[in-house]
Image 1 (tube, rainbow, N blue to C red):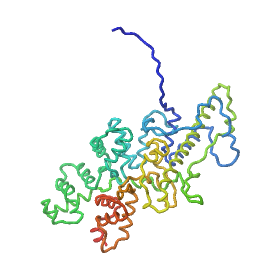
Image 2: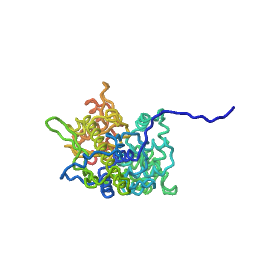
Image 3: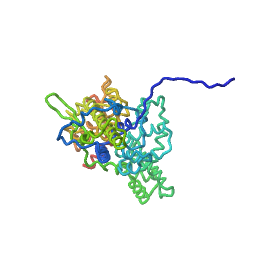
Image 4: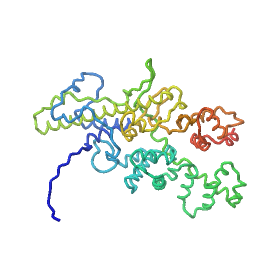
Length: 473
């Protein structure tokens, strides 16, 4: 068969991630504090930028763009899949040195999520496994537990493009992540958390087999302080049982709590929700970020036809300044659109508190504002809104669906937890409500949940069982 060269012409379109578009997407995911640092760095390195303190004319923003600046679009889209951008890089224009991910900066934050992401970056996983791992990390709460069922995480990944993803594959990735620090993280319940920590102990630890058996089979007996049962089932005397119990108590039931309070002392809300005569309104917090403008004196020095080195220096920095200002405007517009859509669906929360919270997932907002789910995730992470009921992260308003009374009604897990907390607060001290009784009271309100779900929510709220509450009182 003869071989010969040929020329083919193909027509196609693809998204090109320019450095400027990467910058716009990267700014979108920054918290207010990090973004302030980025703006400060830009002010120090770019003579074309200055703070807009509200005084003087704004003529600089009205200067006509020359032909060399026509490539800046009138609208800058920050909506893209997470994989369109480099996943490990920070977002500083001054740190784009190609030296790889800034692990030192991630570690210095000392948040649980950042610590897990740092370990994930150093773990050998395929792209598919890494996508699953990122979803699992997103599902970890502040105490280190997996806050969502694996089936729900699996369904979310299927909607993101991993069609036909089996639960078994998610479990395999989960087993890898359960080797991360702090030991016990990614557990689905207290028993699994303690077993993970026991598995990390040396095999020659005294009474380790008996301790594992106690945690695996008799944790409820330990909570009830049934020493007689424990001694009989474990074959231990009083002294050995005390040593086993001491070993259990040396474990950390909340492995992520050491990271929970770091960096959460004060936040500046990005959005403000308030009520006026026209109803509920959501606006940007004008005090959250400094306003930028072009420096009019330096802009006036730019000459269109001059090809000198000095003039090219001014042109390049003017281009960078306009891109940054356009990226900030795009970030604010996206944040405001998403924030308004979220609060429009959570009006009952603003008026009635947690019990009025509606079930909401990222896909609902993504469909409403016509953006990708990963964009919504970036917008709602470390972005806060000030409401009459307090300051909340936007992610707080997302919660899973829980079945209602069979007529299509569904309830938010956050609202159900708030209802459980209220019922227990109003119970008779001498006759505390059992989990079964809580199920009946919730059913009377049209909320159909299983007893194990009520027990799970009660434990997540840090509320002891009815027998323990009665004994403590």
